[in-house]
Image (cartoon, rainbow, N blue to C red; front, side, top):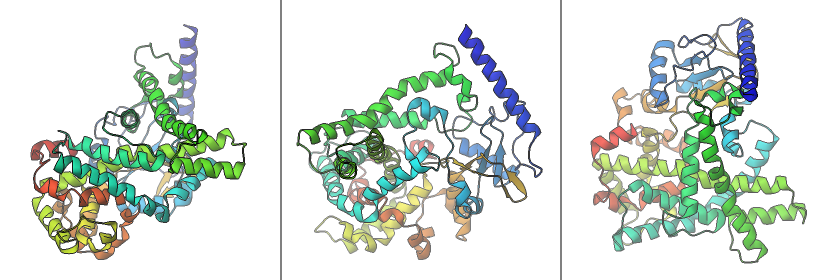
Length: 472
């Protein structure tokens, strides 16, 4: 009873503080947005399902810069390429930081450098990550990618054993590749513990990504209310996922450390990190250095289990729904590669149409409809509106890529709703400017290249209605 009274008092104090802050708003008006309620602002206006579609409706009413009054986390949603470029690119010196998340802390996802505020800790993580994933280092991992993709082809074409779920087959490829690269671990099927851990941990993370849904993010004292109290669904959720996230991060890394002690370890990114840290620190490896290494390894591991897998699925779904795209891609493969061998990474520059498909599929079914949150570190103004220090900035990536890109390329608006490579093949400069996938998504390229025959043979042909309803 005493704990409940104390939490109630803290909550009342926070609400009073928020009310007082509203009395001292800056002279310039805030950007327009939906009118909220007293105290809770727009908490009840943001839907928990596909909020990017609601943001699009608001953009038609209020413009490309929308303000949401979320207690403790005032949020601006950007709905055009120009607004995103003006703030996040031109003013990156003040818009590059990240807000801290109570849910990430409660779920133990705060070790991920993608969610860290701009600080020395973030710079340390990025430095180590770049050492092992720069363009020069990535090329060293190509043999592993080739081997895993061809093993997948063998399972499908020779053993005739595809699963009933294309997504699971693709997930196995990417998880196998990243586990081999990061920890020199081999997996035989999707029931491997490391595969299940990554999948479930990322599922927990996705539940925290929608702004305004979890009240604990906006009223911090709620985190101290016991999970048995009715209405504490966020607390229950984080208690369930926290041990999964911690195990996902630590288990494979600890196995590499143990194998190194027993001198029974093969080369991997994790073992190379540990060796480099020992070289720099001697035998006195600090807990900070150890934590840094396991964090960076887990970032790559978890990303492959989620975003890269989703991007590959988007490509295959697009090809299944647009057979004319399949035929043109196969014609380019026959012309460039020929019938006597499988594609290699050296063919990349010559496969212009395939590269355009990759970029178009990632635009058409965007993996992250809302960008990761940014946070402005000092007061700013834009288009005659005030953006106060601490405001969270989100980009409606789905709206920008699905609609605005077509207009910027002088094409019909309807083209934005379908999958077509014209926006890239007819604009070589645009294709080359956006072609970061040669290093970042080279695995995705290889999955596409090695699955043409499967798609053309309708091994995974989906029902049009179910696919469109699931992805768009």
